[in-house]
Image (cartoon, rainbow, N blue to C red; front, top):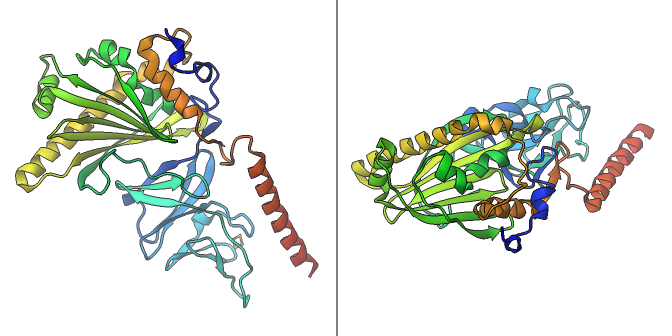
Length: 367
Ligand code: FES
C-alpha cells in the first residue's frame, strides 16, 4: 500500500480509536424524549459518569451531576417543583442552571452550584455535550439545515464490540463488496467537515436481481449517492440519495463499561407534499429501518470476536485509516471524570475549584 496517503502510526497505536478509557468531547444521546415527561427525574450513566435528567414545567430537559453538592444524596430521588429540583434529604432546591435557590430554615441560600451540562433536544432524543460549552452542532445531515424532514425512531440496540468497530462497517468497502455480496462498486472520497465530522462518499450503481435490490433500484433509479458522515466517531449518518430521493439512517452510539456499544437508530427522509408524498416517505422510513436492522445483524457474531489490528493495510482500507486519523486528532476525555486526557490546565482548574469549595466549608465550620 502507498503509505504516504495517510499516517499509519495512529492506526497501530491509537489513543482514542477502539479505546474504552477515553472518548471524544461531543454531543451524545442520553434518552428518548418520550421517556422523560414533565415532572420526571431519571438517573443515567453516560461514559461512566452518573447524571440526572429532569423535565420541569417549562418542558425543558436539564442535566446535572447525579449527587447533591450538600451531602451526596442522589438527586434522582428528588422532586420537581416548577422548573426546579428539590433534593429529597435536606430539601435544598436547585434551578435549571444548578444554582441553589432555597434552603429550608435559612433566610439566604448559600452560594452554591450543582454541576450542569449543556443539553439539546432533537430528532426525538435528548443529547448532552460532554464539556463546558458546545464547540460544534448536533450531528446533522449535510446541506439539510433549515429543511423540513420526516423522521422516525428505529431500533435500540446493544452489541458486544466497541462503537468505532461497529460503525466502520459502512465504509469497509471490501466487506460491502464481498461479504455482504452487494453489487455496489465503492471507491470512497473523504472530506473533513470540521474538527469533529468527516464524510466519505461515492456515486454508485445498483445492480442485481434480488427483491431488495429491485426495490432500491425503483427508489433510487439505478444511480445512487452513498455517503457516511461520522460525528465524534460515535454517531454516523449513512445516506442514500439522488436528485429526487433521500434516505438517511443515523446510528448514534455510546460506550458501556468494558467497551460494549449501546445505540439507537433513527431514520430521516426529506418531507414530501400530499397524501402520496406521505405514503412514499412512510415506505422510505420503513426501508431505512429494514436496512439498519440488517446492517446491525449481518456481522454481529464477527464483531463480537474481532481483535482489531490493521497489520496489513491495503489501498481498500484507506477510508478506515482516514477515519482513525481524523478521530485521533479530536479532544479526548477520560471515562467517568470527563476531564481532558492528560490536560494539566484542566487539572489545575479542578484543583482550584476543589480548594475554593474546601475553603468555603472550613469557613462555615469555624463560624
Ligand atoms: S444531601 Fe441534598 S440537601 Fe442535603
